[in-house]
Length: 280
Length: 99
Image: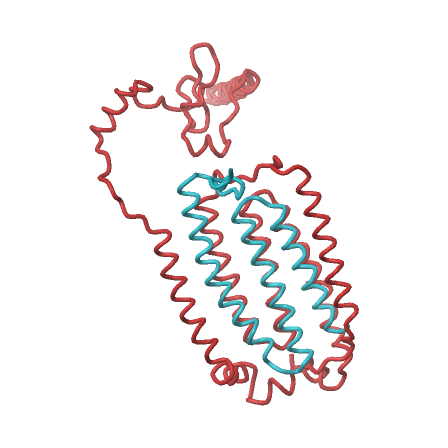
């Protein structure tokens, strides 16, 4: 970093070639991560890609002389915010697969067209501005003895009201989040007896749900039990697996494969047993 | 390389985030795209701070981070409570007030 700063004070038109190399390599990865964020179908993958992009942005902050912000970016964004996202994905995620059906016709194409137009507009705006030379942060960072000290001097003098207000905002947000997610139980929870009486009244399914796989050849929880006519009954697999679509196939071919496998292992075991007896 | 390249990268990330907000319909992913846009703005602020040689840009980026943290907390709480009420995190399903 000190080499960077020295280069900045000497040449105000270009950065060091090391920083240029870092920019092109990590910038590519950052853009790829951003694209993955919007293209991945599962929200967990999106969150992880976004976390990668944010870490790369932290490196860019460090390269730009914003040492404090670089550390804060890692701690606050990748440490706190993205983990919060992951928690919510875990709470909500299982059934929240994005459907590919368009509700507004042609919305996706128009979104892409708008995005392209917006990007071209932004790029053209930056390209038109005359931004060939830059001052560098060497002087500003060393004025108060360092980046953190310089930021502190600004926060607690010029921006002290904004700082106080953001404090109030954070407390309000924390209380608001607790109020929004807190659920007071307004009525008593139904007892087991009431639940069974309700089942009898509805007359839909009186006994407990059938166990998985008891009519199939295996007792695994993800294998649907077979009905007397040979068709699999989805009712036997637990709700979570059903919603995730993780029920194992129990078609005739799969069962035949399983049977062949069992027969082979049986033969193998029998052969081993014969050999043992022969050796004895 | 001139630091203006960081501005181009920031514009690109902002555009990708904006397109994501328009394309995706899972509320959580839409929210992540908003975060991406905020981050792109922060990168632009930090770069401007370096170009002009003063720290005000970094202060603004710092405040953006604080506000983003507050926004994420409240937004995710809203998503969770909407999910509890109607068992869906799709932004299309929240159309109760539509005629």
